[in-house]
Length: 113
Ligand SMILES: [Zn+2]
Picture 1: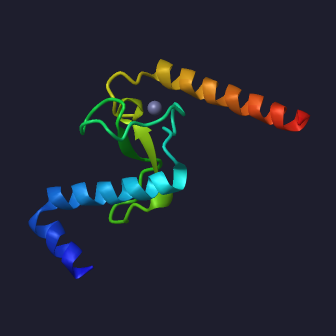
Picture 2 (picture 1 turned 90 degrees about the vertical axis):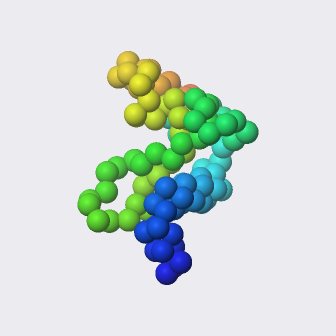
């Protein structure tokens, strides 16, 4: 931990990058390789900053001074995150409806089986 604090102080960019990388690995282990928003597979072989690449997104805002925990993070496509410029309310709504329809279809399928 003390080493982390030194890196954090001396090189905040490096610290953030390392933290992001570490979270990405853990979220991937927990949730698999799908985007939480559109449910399509994430690409991990692309260059940093690519639209179909993964981005760690926070679900709920944390109170100031509090550490963000993994419970509050998910993996999304860079293009699917809330900050993505092309992610209008309309797109979000469409994705939400599609996810709901999928959930509904899955639950019906399960009942019949
Ligand atoms: Zn996505």
